[in-house]
Structure formats: C-alpha cells, structure tokens
Image (tube, rainbow, N blue to C red; front, side):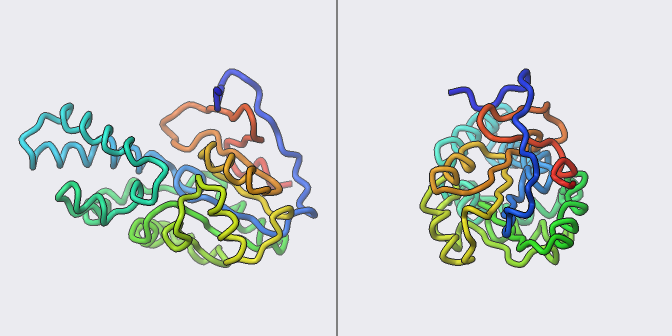
Length: 229
C-alpha cells in the first residue's frame, strides 16, 4: 500500500483539545530536523568508514545502507553502541563533531508552550538511543518541556511494535483514547492505531531538505503551528 503521496491534499485533524489529556511526541523528524540524521548516517559515517577500510565513499555508502536496512525497525537500528562495535567507529563522538547540524523544526517550541498553557501532559517518546537523546537534548534545550522522556530501549521494544504502546501505557498511565501521538513514521502510527491510540498525527516533512509527503491514511501536518488554535 502506498503510504505517502505529496500530490494529494492532506487529511486534516480539526483540533479538539478538550478531548486530549496527553501528548506524545517523537523526536527525530518530528520535533527535530531529520537532515542531521540523514546526513550523518548516509554521508558522514560512510566517508569515515571508507577512509578506515580502504573503500571508496560510494562502496562504503552502499555497504552501510544495506546494513542499516537489514535491521530497520529493531532496537539495534538506533543503538549507537551496536553500530560503534559493528563499524569500529566511535559513533557518539562522530555525532558530536557535526552537532551544529542538529536543529529544532519551526514552531515546535511554540507548540510545546501551547500544550503547557492547555494543561496537557507532554512526553517525548523516541526510538533514539539514550546517547543520541543526550546529545540532542543538550544541543536543543528541549528537555525541560516534557513531563517525561522515554527511549524505546527502556520499554524493550521499538515503536513499530503495537505492544510497545501497551507497555508505554503501563509506564505513563495515560488514557489512550484521550492521547495524541505525532510522528513522522507511518509504521509507528500504524502500530499505535492497532493498539487503539485516540489521535494520530503524521509529520509530512521530517527533513528540511526533503519535499512534503502527506500520509494517505493519517491526518498530516507540515508545521506544529497547524495544531495551535
């Protein structure tokens, strides 16, 4: 099934904030510009890997993209320790070298403040590794806007697994029918829908360098200002 199509008008969620108690927000691509991650994994790491393994950048990129794809959607996929060991590189140190590329999407802070004025519980829920989280929270100063921050490693499953959301509910104690989840990953939203999440929002432009791709199934936004009424 085709998941996103930039040629169709987006499905919209007409904000009914009185029916929402809890807001769950993804990090990479949702709150933060995914350009950093795309550049890091698809270009910067292959360049360093090529230098250390006598490969051309193109050969290294092809090999690494295949490795990434083979474990996509698992906990290992975002595990910096896993990749440091497998690639023989200090992945956290490499991230710090280009952390100037870590950027918050426009209107994110406005939206986080708005949720506070409405009295909503706001949680960051990410597949990112704890070391990635630490680097990005230090760079962006977003941590103080959340009631709690949860990495999928703490839950023991990736967000693409419907059981992740069951476990998260037991940790955070929210009412799933009164909970909003915003994420740039259609598979994550599908898992949350299977679980029974009340409001699902797709972020249609995770990277500032990419075009807008609306979900054909879930209400879509480009910027969080669209949810401020």
